[in-house]
Image 1 (cartoon, rainbow, N blue to C red):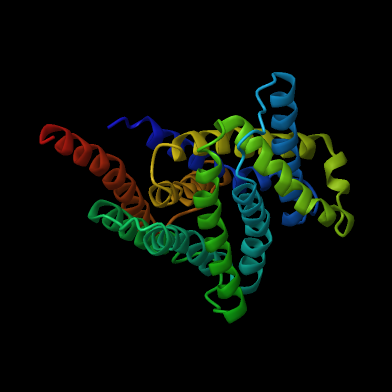
Image 2 (cartoon, rainbow, N blue to C red):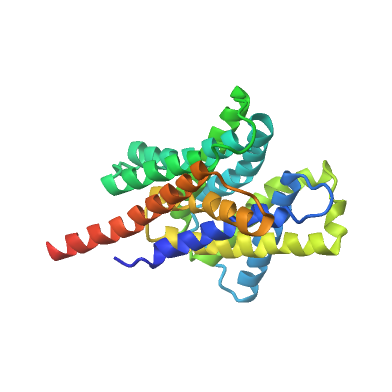
Length: 294
């Protein structure tokens, strides 16, 4: 089995993991929803322009229902996730949202696409989710808010739906034009938020640079890598590998921001790494065994 698709998804998750650290350096107050809108606009519209100039954007045989579901899911993820964090704290909001996504993706594939989860995916997902819980065990307030948890589950479902729906889009389009189309439509959904929140921070040169980094690196490049990998592996596996995002964010928090992780959090780091290794190496070993006995 070619491990390249798994590595691409891991690299995408690592780029997503730099988002929090980058936002930490934004001067002034910036509402997460407007940051998300700018990210999608920069990432989506720039890629769309590129594909139009290079004439690589072909709209024939596009699955428009899948495009709309993907775009709506991506647009919904950000307000649901950030609202859940505000209501129930960073720890619970992050664990419920990010931890529920691979489980929900696996259930959707099982119930609607008739793809039964295998032992490798189940083991890797359980290790990763436990690791995610331990990683955030001592972070944020432990106040459980029912609405906040519901929004976090909605965010997890939105990301799972994005992964599954965008995989259908990728069946008829290449990764770059597919990401350009999906994110441009998602940006249109979020543009109205720019009229309701203060966006003066974008005029600060340093902030503008960070926003462009978020748009190009953590959106355009990251989702191209994610889509290229997603095209060749199950959606549930890709979503499980995306748990490398909080892992990267936590390590950057230690190395760049100066945060301190407890031994419990470091145990979570080890389990997250273990889950990722089980999924990538386990799938490779399984494919090799199937090849030997074929």
